[in-house]
Amino acid sequence: MSFSLKTPEGLPTHAQLVDFFNKVLPPNVKDIPLLYHVPRWPGYNASKIYVHDIVLSVTPTLGVYAKLRQLARGTRKAVCFLHRPFQLDRKALPKGSLVLANHKRFDELLTVGYNLALASRLGMVVERATCIQGYKGDPERRIGIVGPLGQVETLENLAQTISAELCVADIHKNSQSTSSQTIQAVALMNAFGPDEVSRVILEEVSPRSLLYLTGQPRDLGLRAAETFRMPSICVGHRPAEEWGIRYLESSLHQTWPNLAVHTVFEDESPPETQSVLIEAKS
Image (cartoon, rainbow, N blue to C red):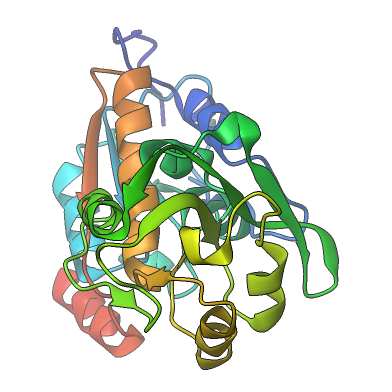
């Protein structure tokens, strides 16, 4: 099988896309491979295949498979990126598809954890922030960031900013969260337990003026925050993951304006449903 050597303007090759993701999500030896599914065409050369379309999703879904099939044109195939690819049905992919994936580093850098971009958008002065590092026996794992806001905000205003930024209408506040209280600092955390709550406390800021922002509400974490009279907001795990997908979409657009970026936001397709899809294709 031969490939065109034309160089479309403003489009990346497979190799350039791999380089992009390696820079945004630096490799972790404990993570799944970025090259999760690679074309097996004879003569496949990642430096010579140009990408017109890329599909981004948290998980493989019926919509992902349908979009990849829709975009397939002969040897021209869309690339796919998944955060949690574990239920990927490789047989449901168009032949010759490239699927990229990242789990641990995505969770660390692009959800409510050590997420410098999100912290900046929420008004944190990241230059004065502290990384919260070390978790579950892994001293290198970064699970969050805590730092001062550029200006004091009411919890109500900050909650509205968080809701808009993460596209979530229903956020969970603890009993210490009142709309009129003022917030001077924020902690973005990928875990919510008593130890994590105690680790974000700052000498210069009262716990009552420090907002603990995380994904899933945890009873032990909620009780610990209430002990310190610390307000907390839980946005849910999935909205945090989808924020990361939208961030990648924006970054890809900025890097290659002519690249068509497609996002799929829907629940993961169970394996039995995927099997029906495969049968329908044949």
